[in-house]
Image 1 (cartoon, rainbow, N blue to C red):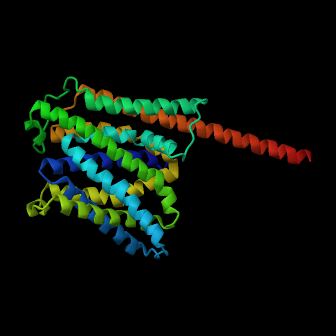
Image 2: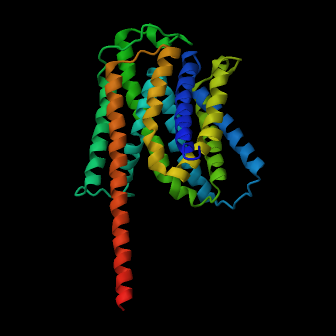
Length: 346
């Protein structure tokens, strides 16, 4: 059972992620303002994390003003901007598209790391070529999702949990919104990729991972609150009742800050980041199944083809990365062996 535990955790993590996509879309379909939803989600998440800090009795670490400013800016770009753009994009598109775009996070992160000169690309190696192919597949997948619709793959029997407000729009307006939503969704992925790239350097100034995460979430709660107040002045949009809106806010906040973060940390610690990333396409499959039967979302051939390209880009980058890591490990072993032989001869 212990050997199967990482696989079960990986499946559970992807299921929770798919659930968050679906619950978010369900709340927006019910008419909830996306900026207000993001603020409530981040505020609830900050409360969960602060409670965890108090419960674990984490000793407050000395944090300089410069370090706090770095965390605040990282939260602004990587979380606040990313989530708000994601919320607008989700209004225009579907939860299935959000799950599909989620597969291009790894290739986008790698591309930004190269662009910012934080990682080198070796084009003369098989791993380097695989990474380039992965980036090209990623771009092709996003363009396919945005510009090619194709025939609809609508099931004969499905149950609508919520009415889809987008179905009442005219076709030309829906097409324009879909294209806009696709590129906004990709823009939010770029923001999250920047968060992944800069998180490790910024976290060096804050040794406690839990306190660092709490400060990130609290900063984003303040920032998203300011954005929501500036954008939405209608008080009726801020009211939460005993409906899907309240369930979506609490479940997304709790699952993101309390459950998913710990599951991901445990999985990466036990099996490594590559193993964790390899399961990302499962989220797309689960999201398509549940969003089709519960939300009544219509899946098009273009969405399937774009999703396949994005999954292919993910695996190309992961394979190229593991190939380069293997070659680097082999090189280090050879150096250690030659050094040991030299010392032996001496």
